[in-house]
Image (cartoon, rainbow, N blue to C red; front, top):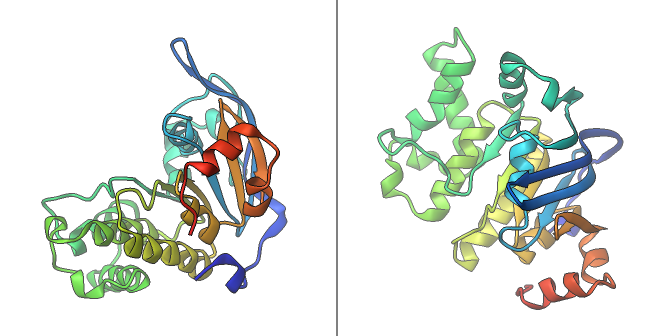
Length: 259
């Protein structure tokens, strides 16, 4: 499934994430150098860039896991740097974070991994309500039959799917994907790409997808933001970025395989 083969609604009147003049350094290393970006309601946007370019730093700042040195990040109408701990926790309940490692608890089976964030954050649910929520999330990622499996017994692609299911159980408005296809074979990558689109459709999410995988970006995203040397050198459709008259962008595309 590719983006041009599906219909979905993007509300360009409503920005769910707005980034203005964002800077972040670590010691003498300047990672983000004044970036600006808006992500609209219902949109999937990929942040492309080579390893170490600051892609993961960016989504950690969006989620309030890192503080910028300068600049402003507004998520769902909230200025992230101005929120206290309680307010930040409340905002994060509206954001699904799919970690590169899937971040599953090895000692818990799939059911327990999904039920844990739900019961921790939504009080007074009955066992039946929890069961139904877990089944719905697993059904969304096509793994209802793995409900009693331990993470160690799952393939890499299945762990990615379960990690996504665990974020979906809280019905997030925004999804942040950190290298969703990293380390997976081409067939499994294609399955994850399809799942990202299905999540966008079924849950009406807006997503930021951090990746260096051009196939993932091309097949799942409405726009691409090309991060080079701490700034967005080009933002637009995949074709816009692919055809950009920028030597560094051309070099990045030349060294990556496009299906």
